[in-house]
Amino acid sequence: MKLMKVTKNLGMLLLGIWLILTGLIPLLGISFSGLGTFMAIVAIAAGALILMGR
Image 1 (cartoon, rainbow, N blue to C red):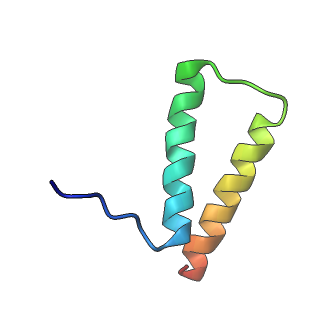
Image 2: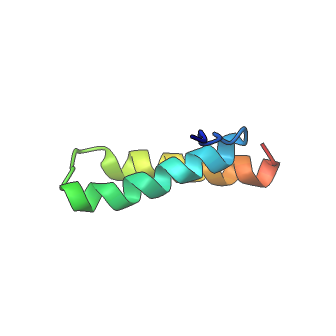
Image 3: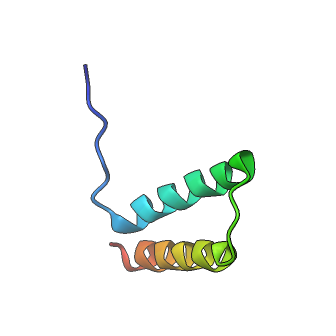
């Protein structure tokens, strides 16, 4: 059985987390007051890290 490799690139890891959360939030009906701000911060961090090559 082959194990999945976790990327060492932090930006791509954050992007993956953001994409999964973006899909799960409406599917599961998750909602709290700072959700939009939290998702925006994760997206900005992922984009910045990808552009910096980290």
